[in-house]
Image (cartoon, rainbow, N blue to C red; front, side, top):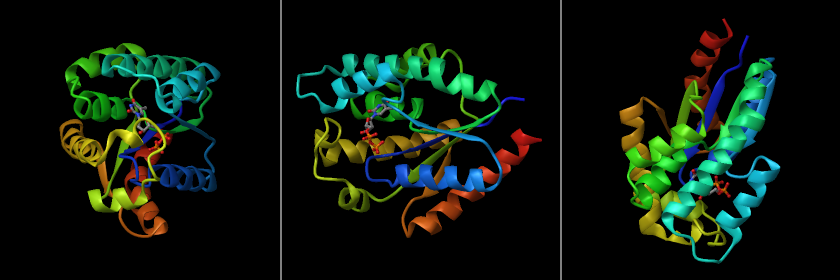
Length: 205
Ligand code: TYD
């Protein structure tokens, strides 16, 4: 038996990391073995890439940014996600390829097709069983975002609005679940669970 691979997505300030945590708790409470992970930076090599990507002040061209996200993903799939799925664990990842499509493909303007090709190579054909995108209004995300500390947070409100719009249109195109991320965390968690539960039942059968 192989596990179920679920990806949580959304812009900075969408509340995605909180919801990933709550989803992991709910799946464990339902008796599933769950591997909780994230991008970028979940492996020891990835942690070094993450620090170059986000914490460093040195200039970083958009193509270089994309390639580093892809390198992180390749290592993540190889070292964490595939082995966990092969062992029958569920995997909940806070971000995966949809982030590259939205941030580098559309936000940075590299083009979603270019990014999809490169990221497809990086993930070695592995597809999530379900992608859940948390959607919140720009004004709400702005309030929730911390004072800009990392490279992406420094990118500014216009960039983050473009990323949100990208997620909305990519979700339609790819059949990702678009979930309203506004409101108290437990209410949003119920919405997330209502799209995850049917997928979990199908995969576990
Ligand atoms: P992180 O601190 O993990 O923020 P968040 O809680 O919003 O996930 O930072 C990850 C940042 O990296 C976030 O701004 C999105 C960005 N990112 C990309 O631009 N492309 C990618 O492919 C991935 C995985 C992340």
